[in-house]
Length: 248
Image (tube, rainbow, N blue to C red):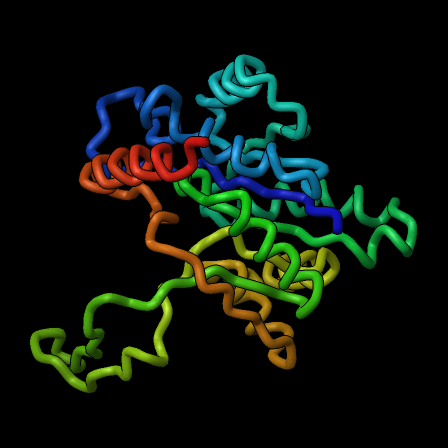
């Protein structure tokens, strides 16, 4: 198995209530910046061969410095993020599409592309391996957790509840989302041509390749996305817990 990894690290973090000049990717989480934890989780996976990171132009220097300080060897591509998350992902897809086309047919058959949010720093290597393996076997695999709360539709007025959804059939979707390389390359190329935007990469596959089933990979609540200041405090507590449970 060979995994090419895309990290979307260009979010502005408007709901994080940051000071001027701050980026949530570089906030301290324990001893290291958030993005350090994210990259390290993939760096230690033997089957990951290359990473491409998309960030805002103002933070390219910070990204290169972080990678050099940590001696990460698999971050090969430093790319400028786009206006939307999907634009940033597409910039990375173009780079990996060129690399993929140059591979032997045998190598192509064992290659997947994983797409992850840089602001999900607590993803675990064992989760990454399960997602990549299922993506290779089934074509597409997405991590998810069961919602803890009841979910309801609202009516057209926006003031009253409508239908209550069956919680057992719902999942909260996470990243990294994994796909056979050709599948996600084609999905992004089609979306780019159509000017179609979705909230995640799996939705592009659902739209353009409806016959492709997407495997659910049950993960845990540790893989949260840092969106608000409260999320950072929760992540600190989870990191402390993980450090204790993983200590020899």
